[in-house]
Image (cartoon, rainbow, N blue to C red):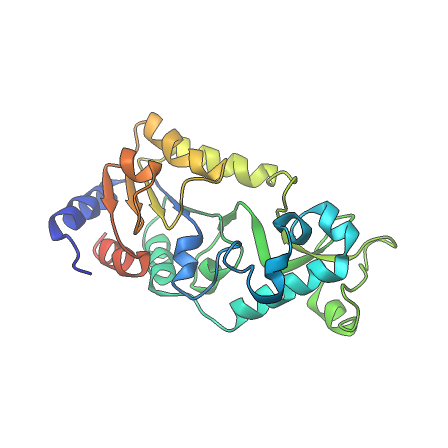
Length: 250
């Protein structure tokens, strides 16, 4: 892929000039680390299940062992990979200047592994396990001690079970996180969007909120989306190529 230098330079200048930057990332950023999207991960033995059987409170109540093993398999996929150049570039951007808020739809924790801080995880994280009743975090030592159970019991409630700290179908996004993301979108001078289809709400509304409050919009995505069509700059291609080039001098 050949980078469009004129487009790149314009977007880079806008990023450099912005005092407050919001960044929104989606599954496309982690797909370049060979992490399949939720739908793409429904392969092999998992292909026969409806998504709600694998990622909903009802599915967990019906077959907690099935849901636990589905997420254990996904965690193993994440553990076998690492952040890519796109994750690294965004962490560098955040470390190098104040006023950068990183918002992600991803649950793999790669932004933090790359060195990003205070990441707003809209959909939670595979890296955390919580009690299904109290939603208190369960320590890894406890999980290791009860590794034979699928899922392990919760140490926080007699009726609780261990579950991943992710947002399932039918569950609300964490209120404090979405409020912080909405505030960042409304207050930013520029929003950088990478690897998101723009189809999952409320995350998909964030670039439009930013634009409506006067922010410039940079969209990095191989395919054109609704966000791309309204963006000031659409950098068509993989984020692992565009983001380092965009951020290196910003």
